Image (cartoon, rainbow, N blue to C red; front, top):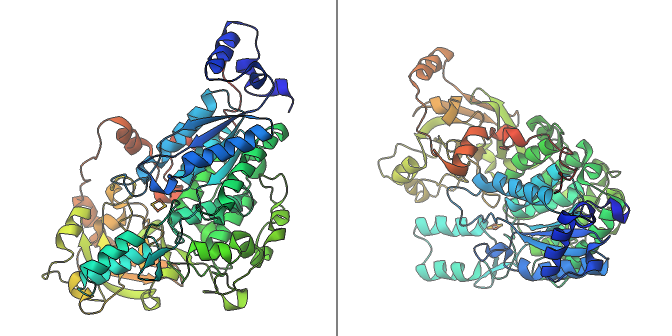
Length: 573
Ligand code: FES
């Protein structure tokens, strides 16, 4: 790439009215003529917001990114964008992942940007930012927010989501005092950064590194560690070099790099949400990825990361134990080491520095938590287009189970009846939640870890087979079958389940069946009526019109498979 070939040169280079207008307005912002002639313009897409505590440090980190950009001879421009905050957006932040993707894509496409540093980490921000950047296909590098420090409760290390749920279960069972409950509230989130269990945030940043879109080792650095701002500066420096090398996402992302991401997902016992996000990301690159690919790879990859909710430790421990590079080195033979990364080098070269320091946190292959991947893809009469279960986080005895359904028509119905003493439920029952999918939720909320009925909690029951078309937080656990496709809202078989129907799960053989005759289901289908629509206007209406099902990644159908189509700058006047 030569200076006059920079994308931004089309805005700032011409000696005409438009060129003068563009240059004068950047001078208004304090830039000089030499900043606007032949230097890469780097967008720092920042999801910082005071309503997103996971990203509370990103405003400061942007300054370190800028330092790296300036040092490398580029010009940084910070561009704030929608934050998708996992804790606060209702009914589900998943509803807004595609909006962040669109905003990222249009910001990069419409403005004089040569390369982008993407700053995020809280669950949906990583796929949202990447989906937009992949579609624009200009040089881009991901700068992860990093996990927060371990939580602390009375001297005990506690983890985001995972332990809160366990404490809540005990509170519901009457075995945890209000004082201890408040101590959890004070100690669970002690620093900036995202959830420090192997939830969706830690999973998606790890997979971004495995895809090659991040500096090697970056995903494991805790937000509060001084290595984090140093990594931010290095990302700023590297993106300028990437612009000169014209190293774009399409030069990095291949079917093999996505297989690397799936392999790592299995080895870390990653969040089930990663499946939806990886399918959507691959779709943006025109790379076909099917649920079967996850299952194929899952069968040959051991779970090595001993991190909650599947294991014992937290992300801070994972970093001290060697981090993702060390883990990837342990499964090096299962990876495509010739894939490129943002460094311009191969994944194999990136792994050269990885070394396990604590082998109970990152287990050797002969002491794996599980010999096969932590996630299984299910098919059968209840899920013709697939469903997902995180086997590594489920009680083993429930992975082969047949029981009678207890059906909840929607989340309100669940909330109203789950703790009723009259609920006809036993430990062998199968809890079913309908209308919680992409359209029915809407936004496929993380309702898939249905609560155990209070009367069973008191009997000591701590896990049950639960089935829904919802998602589940990556920090959650239990025998929860998720992402049932097609979803109940559009009349999938899940919509036809009634109380008492027998449901059979056989995770080892990947089967999920509704044991009701075809004739009876036909009768029920004739009587079935679609529930009311959730939105009639605005973004919500667009979402309902164009979102795809879970097995297709829940992207908008009009945004799939357009990588490379928007690299040319538009006509500039
Ligand atoms: Fe942001 Fe969990 S709330 S990652």
